[in-house]
Amino acid sequence: MTNKDLADFLFPNINKTIADYEKEYPARDLPENACVTRYAPSPTGFMHIGNFYQVVVDYVIAKRNNGVFYLRNEDTDQAREIEGAVEYIRHVLEHYKLLPDEYEFRDTKETKGNYGPYIQSERKDIYKAFIKELVEKGKAYPCFLTQEEMDIIRENQSAKKARIGIYGKFAKYRNATPEELIEHLKNGESYTIRLKSEGDFDEKFKFDDLANGEMELHENDLDTIIYKSSTELPTYHFAHLVDDHLMRTTHVIRGQEWMSSIPVHYELFKTFGFELPKYIHTPLILKKDGDKIRKISKRLDPEARMTYYEEKGYPIYAVIEAIMTIANSNYEAWREQNPDANFTEFDFSPKKMSPSGALFDLDKLDNISKNYISKLKATEVFDLLNDYTKEYDTEFNELINKYKEYTINILNIEREQEKPRKDYACMKDVRELIWYMYDELYKVSEYEWKNITDKDEIKNILNVYVNKYYDESDDKDTWFNKVKELCDELGYASNIKEYKADPSKFKGNVADVSTVIRVAITSKSNTPDLYELMRLLGKERIINRINMI
Image 1 (tube, rainbow, N blue to C red):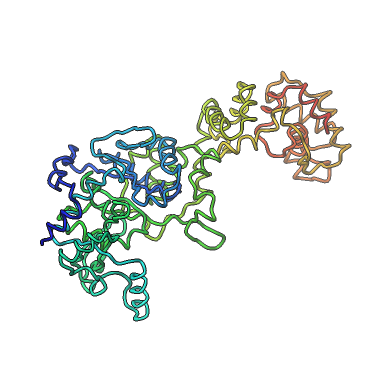
Image 2: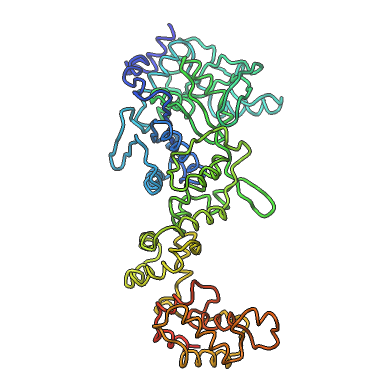
């Protein structure tokens, strides 16, 4: 018997060859130097910030270089698949407007692109054709080692301080004859198929990673499992080789945790004689925790989950900008020079990624977001707020729509000016900062009085002001002059310079009196422009609030 007999026995119904699939998936008709990237998640967990980092890099490299960005569902580990994970991936891509050029979604039966199926479990026959050819050429073989036998091998290796794995003399079925292997198959024994490695661990090869530079690595000599008969599916190592080759991927962007797999993948591409894609192993996402910097944790850090950013209501622009800022060290300088450009216009360079890790800072995200929101029109902020509160705060959503123009006017305070206020980092902040403008929400348990705290004095200031000085038809200058007149009448300095020259001559100053008025009608000592707030509230509501004190 020959290896061809063994291959035919293993895969009797696989008639297509690798050559057939090469014709079925020809080289893409793209401009020279176009980049083909893919986001290839395993639906064994929900999308996190590290995944999103890779998506953004995939997207910008493809778009910047006239290429294709596609989505591939790597569902070969079906025992660990989590319900809803695939749907959530699609949701994130749609929410952030990072839609792939090619994709397939099983639940909605949506497919786009000519290089599918884009779901690995639907590509079984393709993988089998590639594995069949390896077996036929004597480069792969069925292995019947049980879990118990492998555990014993591992224990012996550990005891002798040998490298862990199935290689060389530990690969029990590596040199078995086709007849012997077929006999095991006829007995119905469970098996895997292993690559018959030709590597030598004592030898090294050079590997160029676009982010980490040239590396020298030990050759792979492990007889790596490439196929499991129990699922009729390949392992990640093998499936990614076949798919990246046939889908004509030019750049594989993945996390640093896959660095240890490079020798296996290098050997697999070499075994088939396929051109190796360019690899970019992205840095770990780090965070500052007190005085320490550590890897961001899905278990410890809520911001590791992509749901966090939607639950807080961060604009999609801000989240993408924050990622781009940590992805390339020169992005911030570029953004300053190109404030209105799309991020895909940036000349992204993997060499400017930090191999030591990317520090993701929520304070930085907040600053980016505040700057962005401050430049929006009030109507645009209202639209963001409306979309957010529809899902996350229905009570507030009803209020802002009941008083839509009023809400837009609140959001417009100190907005359209040279230096606009930067209060809101996310939509969740808005209610927390303007709730006092709605009578339905105005239930005060504590007032933030500052320098003037005597209740009788506070009531006197307010009563004199409302009864003698306040006129809602006044323009801003007239309004402020009347506040100063109030100060003069009640023994407070209307001029700050005079107050600083001799504070003992006065009960306080105009800022103290203004604070009393501010706190009386909002309960807060820090608010947007007081004149604008009073203009929107109106005299009747102001008096009602003063009477509540």
